[in-house]
Length: 377
Image (cartoon, rainbow, N blue to C red; front, side, top):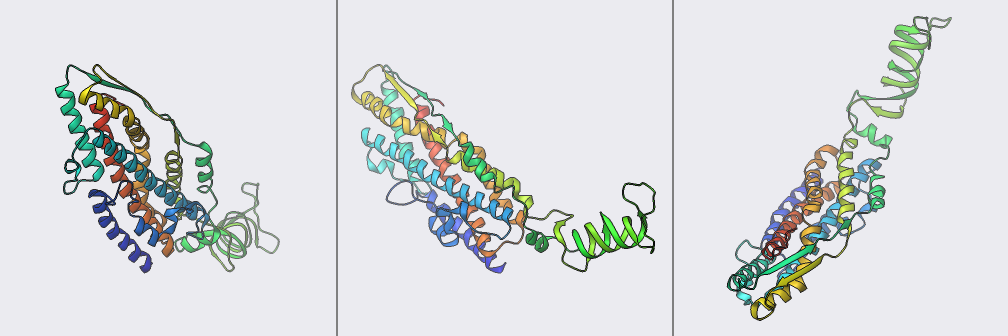
């Protein structure tokens, strides 16, 4: 567990440094850099792909939960990179079309490149539209329609509902709470037929009040008390051999994370949804001068901004919050994890937070321009 804690601590430090990269504009050469990729590659290669077939934990349900969360975190990271590239690229093209000097698109301290260039475009749009008030401009947009695959979600959810591995139950059930079928000698409460001594009342099955003791005085029925003999059903207490079909009378930690598993599966489906292109119409009274250039660049680039605003905005806001909560709660909900599983949960949680910050910037930058053009979604 110490190795896992050290990896988690390294991941947290990586989150701080990676967030600073995001805030300062990601990769210097362009938009759409993979935020936190170096950290994820080191701690959890599955973040780059293949998580749904990864082996993180011996228990099938715990493994399915981690698979779903890491997969959804990877999807969100990729979505953030696409949104950044799409919005940043559209704003760069608009800036060139409108003749905005490069120094006006240079990020200020703590500002991302996407925010800087899109803000410069928004300011320039306002100036053009103010001076050309008589030549009104108005944009109408039919937003894209996004459809998530029910098959993708169902396939993922199938891993959330598998039975808990018996070995995992034995290893994670608190002392004194493990029970199951005892084929040896049970020294506790027997939920079935107790063949042996019954410290309590021994009753014949199906016959209320009828004694269940055999001729030798031993119990051969339902023991309302402590059975000291073989038990053909669940034995609560001690068993002198390994119990069969083990269960735990308090919650075993792995199944308590099943809600996060299903939430991650929904996010996985939503983040891989297919979206139709938006339809944008830009109307302007005078198609000359700066107003003409503005109308032309909006017709060319506003569809990309509208698509990003819808596909990565409110549509997936709930999914992002689900993944943020999962990243914060899974380590506690799942208890002790293998070192690699622990590192992957931490790295995926960091990727979610970085992607959330990046998507927020991209969506806000897109909304500032579409709103300025009157194309309210």
